[in-house]
Image (tube, rainbow, N blue to C red; front, side, top):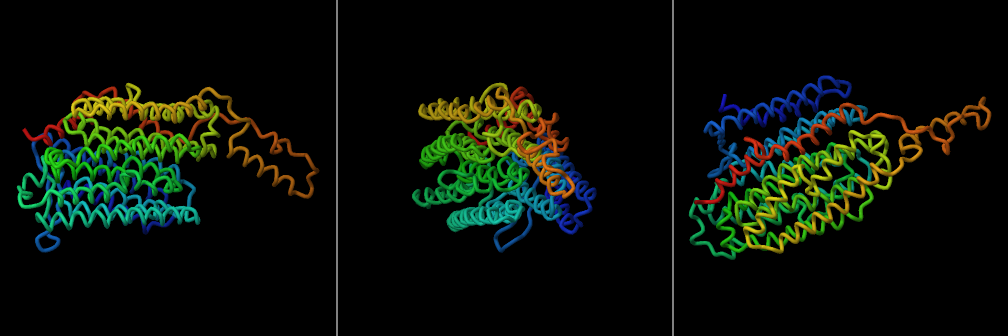
Amino acid sequence: MNDWLLPLTLASSLLAGLIIFFLPERSVGWRSALNLGAAVLKLACVAAMLWGTQQGISYELRLPFLPGHELLLRADPLGLLFVTLSAVLWLLTTVYAIGYLEHSPNRSRFFGFFSLCVTATVGIALSGNLLTFFLFYELLTLATYPLVVHRGTPQVLQAGARYLAYTLGGGVVLLAAIVWLQTLVGPVEFRSGGALVALEATAGVENWMLVGIFALFIAGLGVKAAIAPLHGWLPQAMVAPAPVSALLHAVAVVKAGAFGIVRVVYEVFGIEFAHNLGVLLPLAVVASVTIVFGSLRALTQDDLKRRLAYSTVSQVSYIVLGVALFGPAGTIGGLVHLVHQGIMKITLFFCAGNYAETLGVHRISQMAGIGQRMPWTTAAFTVGALGMIGVPPVAGFISKWYLGLGAIEAGLGWVLAVLLFSSLLNAAYFLPILRLAWFEAPPPSWPHEAHAAHAAHAAHEAQPDNPPHAHPTAPDSAPPPRTGDAAPLLLLPTLCAAALALLAGLAAGVPLSPLDWVRFITATEYLP
């Protein structure tokens, strides 16, 4: 059974996706059963590998590919951290997407590519060498494009073209870095402490070459990680449906770029070798600039999803900043934020989708009193927002605490100033939303309700046998807001994600928590 866990983890979503492509639109039950069954099976496989790793079992699969090169899948501790996040959040997003797209066209196409997207993400997490990583990384680009352009409007297609231009361009740069490195040292497998150190392959290589290769890696991976100025595709991609936005920001594309940077720094170059090479300080500067830039841009956005998108630009660079801080505390802060940011950000995007789908609310200026109309969704949004600011006991506080310790450990006092300033900016663009949602009076009607009242009035006036002004609900006297929150299939995953964000903070010290697992990873990355 152990030999089958790796391929089964990939095949669970791959086979489900291929079958779903051929299901007719009316096969709602079969499509939902395949999606949920595959998500549960994947989570079970990941749980089994987590348990096995704790017992000292190793999981590895090698397949011949090209002369001198092979495809390699391996469940190492770092990969298991990312694949666990992906499996848990995929299950929540699957439930959410089933509810969100209940009455939408082209659902079989959507869920087919949705499953391929998750397959690629899991492949990235479990890749054991650079070649395998690159193949799944580019598959992720191709699988997510149809999800981004799902609605098919001219605006959506334009955003999709921009997405492809950025991500495929980043893929070319990444391929150049891989080819250059492997030309110098041969095939590179990911190793704790750094593959280059383990191979002892850098003795005859000039330092400027290694610095150049490192820069290409960061540039290629930095596109999907939304490092400024390579972030331009991300706000445009918010034209995608809410489940896709949640997937892009919390699990798949953005997180795959950040995870790739983690792999390169720790398991290709090695943290100590990268520090001696002098590439970590410039990386910390780039990450810090992106953190502040993303927060400043978020302040000016009225569209809720675009504000969350620029927040992602900022928050993902916390991971990169932690990677760039030489010392165990910084590593812990960056790696644990890989998980914590994903949980908190998917909560916020689920909430944004709930507001849009239930009330037609897309802009922050429309959110006055929305906490009275949708209290459970707004409570979940509050948890996610406070976590992003770094308020205890939500998970974001744990990340920022360790990043601050890492800055002190690395002797970089200016990083503490960046962290403090960014937290103040986080508060500046989230707290006004919470004040508006909870403490302002709601409008007479919400956009969907006003539209429905207007449509009913227009239909009534169009009847030739109705006298003028006979309809009791004219557009200027729309009915008062109804009670109730989002539909159950939208609300349940939202509340589960918010609960996970709280639990990851409250139970940070318990065995097998994200923080506990990250401490275990960190101990293997710093050579004695």
